[in-house]
Image (cartoon, rainbow, N blue to C red; front, side, top):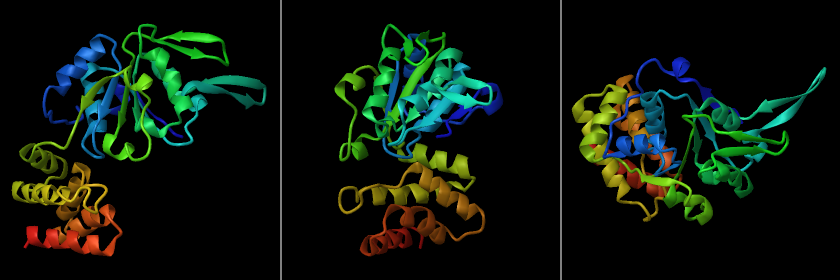
Length: 270
């Protein structure tokens, strides 16, 4: 695991652009001010990570991002002893660094981590705000400004695994979704540089494809995929070809579904 440790001053001198869909910015700010952990729920590619980056910039806090996976152990978060030529030395993990620095610690797709790993977060999400480090005997008190933020995709995880109620109830949950069509078109245009008509067409295509959810299509096109297709089109790739590569192929390997999706592309961009 190579967690992304990015002090704000080094990571981004400019604001990570984010277009609010509701009151999520104000809600997050209040959670941060009152030391409440936050859970971001929403489909893949709807802007959860960008939202956290924007809020870290807005609040002036360092951001440490951890991509969770099946092999993520508690020691990957907390730290471990390393053997060196002159003995052993303790090395903090990314969660421990965030607690010491007063950073925002973002665990992306937290449900992918093992349950015994997720349990180490519990003492940080209530009034104690401590991180027990068993190997050093330290009960580390979270520095001012520390906040724990996790994300996951409820629709996808419900079929595979989910967070325990004892974990879920330690977070303020914020439901994020794909933006309204007009807002999503504005995001695609801003992030890729395409014209308004192209951005609107891509969003129209996405809305049509999203209607196929649970009808043979397990995942629907994210805003991220629309931006990828738009970006390719600005580089001289034909728009339909860009959609085949950036939207259709990532969504399915089933020949009949691919044909149906390509038909939707062709019908949208005649």
